[in-house]
Amino acid sequence: MAKKAPKKAPARAQQTVAANGEIPVVGAREDCPCGSGRRYKACHGREAAHAVQELVQRPFEGLPGEGDWVALRELVPAATVRLILTPEALSAAEGEVPSVTLATVLPMAWPAMRRQDGSVLLGLQTQTGSGDASRDLGDALVQALASAPGTPVPPRRPATDAPRLQDLLDPAAPFEPVVHDGFEYWLEDAESATGEVAASLEQANAEIIPTVKLASADSAYWCSVPDKNHLRWVMPQTEDVLLDALARLVAAGESGLGEGTRLVGSFRAHGLTVPVWDLPSSMTAADCEKPAAAFLERLTGALAQTAPLTAQERKSRADLVNRQVTIG
Image (cartoon, rainbow, N blue to C red; front, top):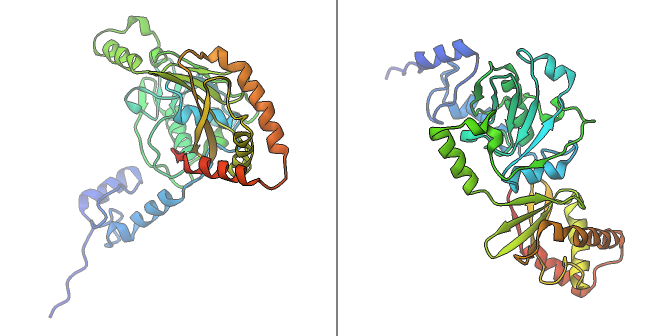
């Protein structure tokens, strides 16, 4: 019986590779567009799958305001932060860049966009493709800097050697979120919006959850939902150490933020722990300031304790762990 001739990669795919130098994504059982004659999953698809599996647990580690990066990524509906880039990152930009602003979310969930005036908006709440949110964001930022004014950046999977945020941002620059009650920051002149743009903006604003950043505690955010309010506080301590300290406070009856409040559990997000309190619907963000500062003092004391947990404290810790949810 005659041997079958080896399969050739589709001509169209080979032309795509020649045009932009990248290997496009195809079905796992299709021929790899690189022309090797092997199936995609056994060729360049293997590298892509490996990159996705390399999950970075703390993608924002090393950046100023790591807790606020996590909060804006997972908890805060509308906020912006002015970013300061390294001279090297700015030197690679196409034309003048008046400003670079991080935003929780952009229209159409774009990863980034270059405005008509040359300024850049970088979207934080986007789908990640590499398993490293910092690399996805860094790649989107580089694309935006190289784009023509008035151009949105489409989503894509970054290369394994694409720059991370830690490579592009000035490590000495402060990270100071500004929380908004709407998405007017999407537009350079929101007051002149009409038609579908105005309708889309109005709908987005109608669905937003009122949120306020506390001044008395780092990375702590009050929010209001029907029937109750919450305080969600991103904390930098190692999870095991923090849970031990919280368990000590729960067992001692010192985990609340005042009458009618309760520590109900925590999130695990991007390698950090986010304790959550239920608050009465009448308790405003301003009402949380003093109780949060007092809780921080109690927590600092609990973190300094080194004695083994008591039986009651171990029970409290187990309860906290059972009510922990991973969201990022």
